[in-house]
Image 1: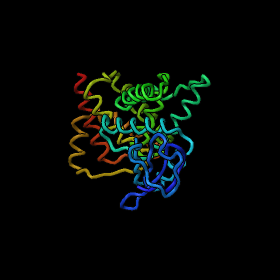
Image 2 (image 1 turned 45 degrees about the vertical axis):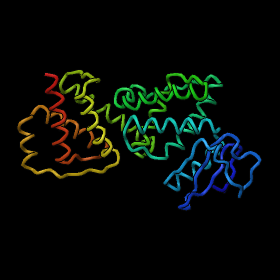
Image 3 (image 1 turned 180 degrees about the vertical axis):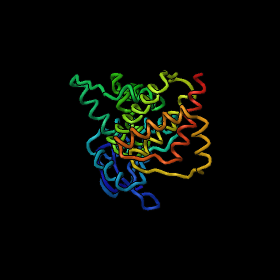
Image 4 (image 1 turned 120 degrees about the vertical axis):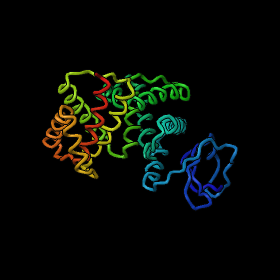
Amino acid sequence: MIIKQIFNNNIVSTMDDKDQELLILGRGIGFQFKVGDTIDEGRIEKIFRLQDSSIYERFKAIVAEVPAEILQVTDDIVSLARTQLNKSISDGIYVSLSDHIHFAVHRLTKGQITRNPLTWEVQHFYKAEYDVAADALTLIKERLGIDFPKEEICNIALHFINAEVNDSMNDVTHLMQLLQEIMNIIKYHFNVEFDEDSVNYFRFITHLKYFCQRVITHSSYDDTEEYLYEVVRKNYPSTFKCIEKIETFILKHYQYEMTHSEQLYLTLHLERLMKNKK
Protein backbone atom coordinates (compact mmCIF):
# COMPACT_ATOMS: atom_id res chain seq x y z
CA MET A 1 0.00 0.00 0.00
CA ILE A 2 1.25 3.45 -0.99
CA ILE A 3 0.65 6.64 1.01
CA LYS A 4 -1.68 8.98 -0.87
CA GLN A 5 -2.09 11.64 1.83
CA ILE A 6 -0.67 12.23 5.31
CA PHE A 7 -3.11 13.77 7.82
CA ASN A 8 -0.81 13.59 10.83
CA ASN A 9 1.76 11.26 12.39
CA ASN A 10 -0.88 8.60 13.05
CA ILE A 11 -3.27 8.81 10.07
CA VAL A 12 -2.62 8.42 6.35
CA SER A 13 -4.72 7.47 3.33
CA THR A 14 -4.12 4.97 0.55
CA MET A 15 -5.95 3.34 -2.38
CA ASP A 16 -7.05 -0.28 -2.51
CA ASP A 17 -7.01 -2.56 -5.57
CA LYS A 18 -10.47 -1.25 -6.56
CA ASP A 19 -9.21 2.33 -6.54
CA GLN A 20 -11.16 3.15 -3.38
CA GLU A 21 -9.52 5.46 -0.86
CA LEU A 22 -8.91 4.08 2.64
CA LEU A 23 -7.94 5.80 5.86
CA ILE A 24 -5.20 3.99 7.79
CA LEU A 25 -4.63 4.55 11.52
CA GLY A 26 -1.51 3.49 13.37
CA ARG A 27 0.89 5.00 15.87
CA GLY A 28 3.65 6.75 13.94
CA ILE A 29 2.39 5.46 10.58
CA GLY A 30 2.88 8.88 8.97
CA PHE A 31 5.90 10.04 11.00
CA GLN A 32 8.91 10.91 8.79
CA PHE A 33 7.16 9.45 5.72
CA LYS A 34 6.05 11.27 2.60
CA VAL A 35 3.40 10.81 -0.09
CA GLY A 36 4.39 7.92 -2.37
CA ASP A 37 6.18 5.94 0.33
CA THR A 38 5.12 2.38 1.14
CA ILE A 39 2.99 2.06 4.27
CA ASP A 40 4.57 0.11 7.10
CA GLU A 41 1.85 -2.55 7.45
CA GLY A 42 3.19 -3.57 10.86
CA ARG A 43 1.99 -0.22 12.22
CA ILE A 44 -1.60 -0.53 10.97
CA GLU A 45 -4.15 -0.55 13.80
CA LYS A 46 -7.40 0.43 12.03
CA ILE A 47 -8.57 0.69 8.43
CA PHE A 48 -11.61 2.83 7.62
CA ARG A 49 -13.43 1.91 4.43
CA LEU A 50 -16.59 4.03 4.03
CA GLN A 51 -18.83 3.33 1.03
CA ASP A 52 -20.62 6.70 0.87
CA SER A 53 -18.29 9.21 -0.79
CA SER A 54 -19.92 12.27 0.80
CA ILE A 55 -19.63 10.72 4.29
CA TYR A 56 -16.04 9.75 3.56
CA GLU A 57 -15.12 13.34 2.65
CA ARG A 58 -16.66 14.62 5.90
CA PHE A 59 -14.82 11.92 7.81
CA LYS A 60 -11.52 12.99 6.24
CA ALA A 61 -12.16 16.50 7.50
CA ILE A 62 -12.85 15.13 11.00
CA VAL A 63 -9.64 13.07 11.19
CA ALA A 64 -7.57 16.20 10.73
CA GLU A 65 -8.89 17.47 14.09
CA VAL A 66 -9.82 14.41 16.14
CA PRO A 67 -7.05 12.43 17.92
CA ALA A 68 -6.41 8.93 16.57
CA GLU A 69 -7.32 7.27 19.88
CA ILE A 70 -10.81 8.81 19.70
CA LEU A 71 -11.24 7.56 16.14
CA GLN A 72 -10.17 4.11 17.27
CA VAL A 73 -12.61 3.98 20.19
CA THR A 74 -15.35 5.29 17.89
CA ASP A 75 -14.73 2.36 15.55
CA ASP A 76 -14.85 -0.05 18.50
CA ILE A 77 -18.16 1.46 19.67
CA VAL A 78 -19.70 1.29 16.18
CA SER A 79 -18.62 -2.35 15.85
CA LEU A 80 -20.16 -3.08 19.26
CA ALA A 81 -23.42 -1.35 18.28
CA ARG A 82 -23.70 -3.20 14.98
CA THR A 83 -23.14 -6.53 16.74
CA GLN A 84 -25.38 -5.96 19.77
CA LEU A 85 -28.23 -4.14 18.03
CA ASN A 86 -28.16 -6.30 14.89
CA LYS A 87 -29.38 -3.34 12.84
CA SER A 88 -28.13 -1.51 9.79
CA ILE A 89 -26.23 1.57 10.99
CA SER A 90 -25.22 4.33 8.60
CA ASP A 91 -21.51 5.01 8.14
CA GLY A 92 -22.35 8.61 8.97
CA ILE A 93 -22.08 7.65 12.63
CA TYR A 94 -18.27 7.63 12.29
CA VAL A 95 -18.43 11.37 11.63
CA SER A 96 -21.07 12.33 14.20
CA LEU A 97 -19.95 10.07 17.04
CA SER A 98 -16.21 10.76 16.80
CA ASP A 99 -16.94 14.48 16.70
CA HIS A 100 -19.26 14.16 19.70
CA ILE A 101 -16.76 12.19 21.80
CA HIS A 102 -14.03 14.68 20.93
CA PHE A 103 -16.05 17.65 22.16
CA ALA A 104 -17.44 15.71 25.12
CA VAL A 105 -13.87 15.14 26.31
CA HIS A 106 -13.21 18.86 25.86
CA ARG A 107 -16.36 19.77 27.84
CA LEU A 108 -15.46 17.35 30.61
CA THR A 109 -12.04 18.95 31.13
CA LYS A 110 -13.93 22.20 31.79
CA GLY A 111 -16.35 20.51 34.17
CA GLN A 112 -19.28 21.00 31.80
CA ILE A 113 -21.91 18.25 32.03
CA THR A 114 -24.99 18.56 29.83
CA ARG A 115 -28.10 16.57 30.67
CA ASN A 116 -30.11 15.59 27.63
CA PRO A 117 -33.86 16.32 28.04
CA LEU A 118 -34.67 13.16 26.04
CA THR A 119 -33.08 10.81 28.58
CA TRP A 120 -36.38 9.36 29.80
CA GLU A 121 -37.70 8.77 26.28
CA VAL A 122 -34.48 7.14 25.07
CA GLN A 123 -34.22 4.92 28.14
CA HIS A 124 -37.81 3.71 27.77
CA PHE A 125 -38.34 3.58 24.00
CA TYR A 126 -34.80 2.67 22.90
CA LYS A 127 -33.64 0.43 25.73
CA ALA A 128 -31.29 -1.64 23.54
CA GLU A 129 -29.54 1.48 22.22
CA TYR A 130 -29.34 2.91 25.74
CA ASP A 131 -27.74 -0.29 27.08
CA VAL A 132 -25.15 -0.36 24.27
CA ALA A 133 -24.37 3.30 24.94
CA ALA A 134 -23.76 2.42 28.60
CA ASP A 135 -21.27 -0.23 27.41
CA ALA A 136 -19.70 2.44 25.17
CA LEU A 137 -18.86 4.48 28.27
CA THR A 138 -16.99 1.46 29.62
CA LEU A 139 -15.03 1.21 26.37
CA ILE A 140 -14.17 4.90 26.52
CA LYS A 141 -12.91 4.53 30.08
CA GLU A 142 -10.81 1.50 29.12
CA ARG A 143 -9.36 3.01 25.92
CA LEU A 144 -9.02 6.68 26.88
CA GLY A 145 -8.89 6.54 30.68
CA ILE A 146 -11.77 9.03 30.81
CA ASP A 147 -14.77 8.40 33.04
CA PHE A 148 -17.73 9.99 31.25
CA PRO A 149 -20.74 10.93 33.41
CA LYS A 150 -23.89 8.82 32.97
CA GLU A 151 -25.55 11.80 31.26
CA GLU A 152 -23.49 10.90 28.18
CA ILE A 153 -25.29 7.56 27.80
CA CYS A 154 -28.34 9.25 26.27
CA ASN A 155 -26.19 11.40 23.99
CA ILE A 156 -24.36 8.40 22.57
CA ALA A 157 -27.57 6.36 22.28
CA LEU A 158 -29.07 9.15 20.18
CA HIS A 159 -26.23 8.77 17.68
CA PHE A 160 -27.15 5.08 17.31
CA ILE A 161 -30.83 5.95 16.85
CA ASN A 162 -30.02 8.69 14.38
CA ALA A 163 -27.80 6.34 12.36
CA GLU A 164 -30.50 3.65 12.34
CA VAL A 165 -33.23 5.86 10.92
CA ASN A 166 -30.64 7.61 8.73
CA ASP A 167 -32.29 10.94 9.35
CA SER A 168 -31.53 14.22 11.09
CA MET A 169 -31.28 14.49 14.88
CA ASN A 170 -34.18 16.90 14.70
CA ASP A 171 -36.37 14.17 13.19
CA VAL A 172 -35.24 11.75 15.90
CA THR A 173 -36.37 14.25 18.53
CA HIS A 174 -39.76 14.57 16.84
CA LEU A 175 -39.98 10.79 16.60
CA MET A 176 -39.57 10.30 20.34
CA GLN A 177 -41.95 13.14 21.08
CA LEU A 178 -44.60 11.48 18.91
CA LEU A 179 -43.98 8.12 20.57
CA GLN A 180 -44.59 9.68 23.96
CA GLU A 181 -47.73 11.48 22.76
CA ILE A 182 -49.25 8.30 21.33
CA MET A 183 -48.41 6.29 24.45
CA ASN A 184 -50.09 8.96 26.56
CA ILE A 185 -53.26 8.66 24.45
CA ILE A 186 -53.22 4.89 24.93
CA LYS A 187 -52.62 5.08 28.69
CA TYR A 188 -55.41 7.61 29.21
CA HIS A 189 -57.82 5.73 26.96
CA PHE A 190 -57.40 2.43 28.79
CA ASN A 191 -56.39 3.92 32.17
CA VAL A 192 -53.48 1.52 32.39
CA GLU A 193 -49.72 1.40 32.97
CA PHE A 194 -47.51 -1.06 31.10
CA ASP A 195 -44.67 -3.34 32.09
CA GLU A 196 -41.95 -1.71 30.02
CA ASP A 197 -39.66 -4.72 30.40
CA SER A 198 -42.18 -7.19 28.96
CA VAL A 199 -41.75 -8.84 25.56
CA ASN A 200 -45.21 -7.71 24.43
CA TYR A 201 -44.46 -4.10 25.28
CA PHE A 202 -41.18 -4.30 23.36
CA ARG A 203 -42.97 -5.74 20.32
CA PHE A 204 -45.60 -3.03 20.40
CA ILE A 205 -43.07 -0.21 20.77
CA THR A 206 -41.05 -1.64 17.88
CA HIS A 207 -44.09 -1.53 15.61
CA LEU A 208 -45.04 1.91 16.90
CA LYS A 209 -41.56 3.28 16.12
CA TYR A 210 -41.88 2.29 12.47
CA PHE A 211 -45.30 3.88 12.32
CA CYS A 212 -43.98 7.11 13.89
CA GLN A 213 -41.13 7.19 11.38
CA ARG A 214 -43.69 7.12 8.57
CA VAL A 215 -45.65 9.94 10.21
CA ILE A 216 -42.53 12.09 10.59
CA THR A 217 -41.36 11.43 7.01
CA HIS A 218 -44.90 11.39 5.56
CA SER A 219 -44.33 8.04 3.86
CA SER A 220 -47.57 6.11 4.29
CA TYR A 221 -48.56 2.79 2.75
CA ASP A 222 -51.83 0.90 2.37
CA ASP A 223 -52.06 -2.72 1.25
CA THR A 224 -55.00 -3.91 3.34
CA GLU A 225 -58.08 -5.72 2.13
CA GLU A 226 -61.11 -3.74 3.22
CA TYR A 227 -62.84 -6.88 4.43
CA LEU A 228 -60.08 -7.55 7.02
CA TYR A 229 -60.14 -3.90 8.08
CA GLU A 230 -63.90 -4.07 8.72
CA VAL A 231 -63.58 -7.33 10.67
CA VAL A 232 -60.95 -5.87 12.99
CA ARG A 233 -62.88 -2.62 13.43
CA LYS A 234 -66.04 -4.51 14.49
CA ASN A 235 -64.36 -7.14 16.64
CA TYR A 236 -62.21 -4.78 18.69
CA PRO A 237 -64.34 -1.65 19.18
CA SER A 238 -62.58 -0.31 22.29
CA THR A 239 -59.09 -0.73 20.83
CA PHE A 240 -60.21 0.73 17.51
CA LYS A 241 -61.70 3.72 19.35
CA CYS A 242 -58.24 4.38 20.78
CA ILE A 243 -56.74 4.17 17.29
CA GLU A 244 -59.28 6.75 16.09
CA LYS A 245 -58.10 9.10 18.86
CA ILE A 246 -54.52 8.63 17.65
CA GLU A 247 -55.62 9.22 14.07
CA THR A 248 -57.37 12.48 15.02
CA PHE A 249 -54.34 13.65 16.98
CA ILE A 250 -51.72 13.05 14.27
CA LEU A 251 -53.95 14.51 11.58
CA LYS A 252 -54.30 17.71 13.59
CA HIS A 253 -50.71 18.04 14.80
CA TYR A 254 -48.70 16.27 12.08
CA GLN A 255 -50.97 16.65 9.03
CA TYR A 256 -50.75 12.91 8.48
CA GLU A 257 -53.76 10.78 7.57
CA MET A 258 -53.54 7.16 8.70
CA THR A 259 -54.31 4.57 6.06
CA HIS A 260 -56.63 1.64 6.73
CA SER A 261 -53.58 -0.61 6.70
CA GLU A 262 -51.93 1.38 9.46
CA GLN A 263 -55.13 1.47 11.51
CA LEU A 264 -55.53 -2.29 11.08
CA TYR A 265 -52.04 -3.31 12.16
CA LEU A 266 -51.79 -0.80 14.97
CA THR A 267 -55.13 -2.10 16.29
CA LEU A 268 -53.92 -5.70 16.18
CA HIS A 269 -50.64 -4.90 17.93
CA LEU A 270 -52.38 -2.83 20.57
CA GLU A 271 -55.08 -5.48 21.11
CA ARG A 272 -52.39 -8.10 21.70
CA LEU A 273 -50.67 -5.80 24.21
CA MET A 274 -53.95 -5.10 26.03
CA LYS A 275 -54.93 -8.77 26.01
CA ASN A 276 -51.84 -9.57 28.04
CA LYS A 277 -52.85 -6.89 30.53
CA LYS A 278 -56.19 -8.54 31.27
